Image (tube, rainbow, N blue to C red):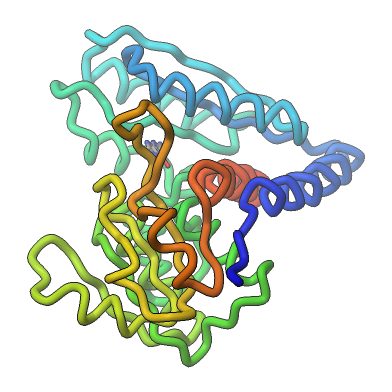
Length: 278
Ligand code: GUN
């Protein structure tokens, strides 16, 4: 029998812990404030941004919301980011991605002060993760480590395979697993004989962005499978990168979609915000 890793429950536990920490900070006269910027009105981004602001309100973090029109210029967005960098009341800055095509995401991300970069996307924070020093870490991989630890799943000495090499998930995920003394392999779209590699994994992290790609044939009996994907299937039902129906019985533990990794991303954003206090 396999365990379903309940991300919603673990995220709630973390939010309760953070709520207490924020209350203690407030009693000390300290306040926390996250600035959230959305450019345009992509419906998925609007849902994510709404959930982030709701989580802030829940744990007692102030949020400033900037909803900018689709045709905002890069200069105007840079000016806003620079003003927020200089604003002492603002501890964290989040620019929701993706940005409209005419704006260079990398330029915007690298302009956010690394001390306020609660997404952990700035080069200084990525570099800090790489050499094992202090800094903000991308929320989704940070949340996955918490899911594993709080489910008593040991990482040390395990064969960990990460499917996907994005800057937001795959790369930081691999570095965090390495930091936890896992033996890490990264697979991507050009990897040959991918199943031969994934079938060696004790812990398989799937962040490949393809609905229901990973079925039982990718999985070693008894492996732990973490599904980062979120899509709508042919019946408009939410699904992940893993075909849960086919995969689950081959695992010892697996995350569902929804209710697995998703809620953890927001909980860890809140964690980063609390740690952005100066
Ligand atoms: N778009 C999708 N995921 C994220 C995220 O974690 N942070 C930001 N800023 N934008 C996103």
